[in-house]
Length: 241
Ligand SMILES: [Zn+2]
Image (tube, helix red, strand yellow):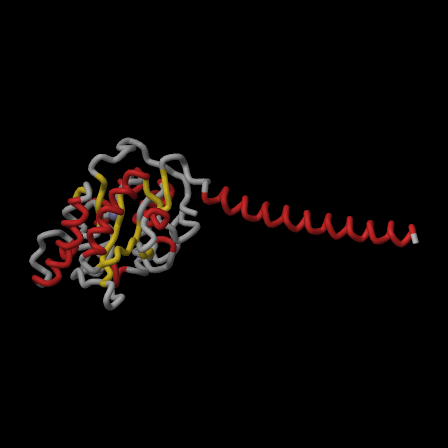
């Protein structure tokens, strides 16, 4: 009798230990995911934590970019910005939502090692895998000297974002007249190579971004930098993950 009670107690003890072990495991796993969320340097946030409706198409974390391969420093297709830039972007996104648009982000914070990858690629003149889509009218040798590729990018300062609009009603990307990262005059603001409708679309994005405190980049309709950026002289190198 007493022996069987001891056995029962032993069993109960083993089961409780097992439960505690499982609970600890669950806790450990969630801690790991929390700590990876918190692994961003202070002052940075994931854009979708601030703007849940933002769509992401992080091209440098895929083969669909001007290099044609995943770029160094992109370990996950996520958009990271400084807190200030994300909050300003939320203002723009809210205004655009009222007008019937989601924002779609192609790139946000970009590590210095990614920029170094671009520079390395630009010097390898034989690698023209993505020429047809991204720079059909340019010789690869001029990309660096014409400023399409540079040794430093404002994206590494964490307050620059590349984006477009998606019409909420249709779920379709809005026609901006040229694709993201198309190297050529057609991507400039004010170009006469696009239709009035395409220009109107670019201006919807531009007006919302300017109202929210971003600066226009004349050469690229998709590229905006926060005017009062918090780290104007710092080029960060932590990976996107
Ligand atoms: Zn950009």
